[in-house]
Image 1 (tube, one colour):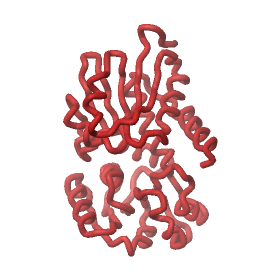
Image 2 (image 1 turned 90 degrees about the vertical axis):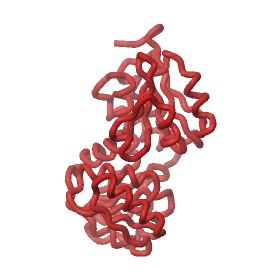
Image 3 (image 1 turned 45 degrees about the vertical axis):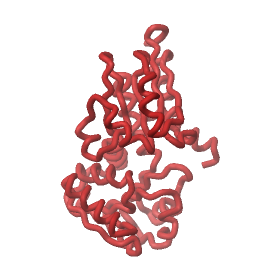
Image 4 (image 1 turned 135 degrees about the horizontal axis):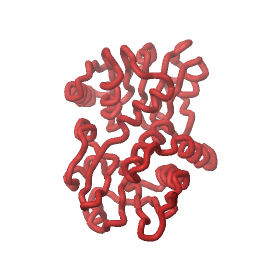
Length: 281
């Protein structure tokens, strides 16, 4: 079945910077696999200041938007409603434009993390550790709230960050403890370690990966593997990468925007791997 002419729909990813985004590759691969030949997916450089005007230009041909930084919180006042998942972390990465003209926000990063872990056989853990305390860390805590039955320890660089993480833990119902970043290597004893830091931040920790570690979820995907992920897998541990997260959250976006389910996970992953490979990553 194909979609053409009057059924043509538009979607896009917005953010700043945006040139690096793999979202167009993933979504276009899904459209091709689903036979949605009238659908297009583009990227637009949009910051907080330009976001309201951009949203006001969207007509009925638009099906949805993917949002990256710095728009995930800035968009919330501009929406007609958001899901409980998005509200739990005050972050929206998906906007569905409904037939009656409403803008509805959701967060697919959280269920995307859970799905990526489940795909690698991690469905429940008794404890976990989080490296970092930025925006991605709150989504990680929300995902851990669904799968971790015991304490989560966040390794952070300042007391201000520690206080912020404790606040998220209380809000999300997570038994959250904090520890100083100088002790971050202790995180590696946990059955699940989630690294949410920017590129390079965990490189110095790679030599401290123990023998036979459990599972590492490193949210980065380019460059890949990170030194930490390479050391982890080299010592026999299971590694879930940022591309796994990117694909799984995009699968949920495609399903919401197109109304088609299931979205073609394998085709989207292959497209993402091909794009990263072509850049030398």
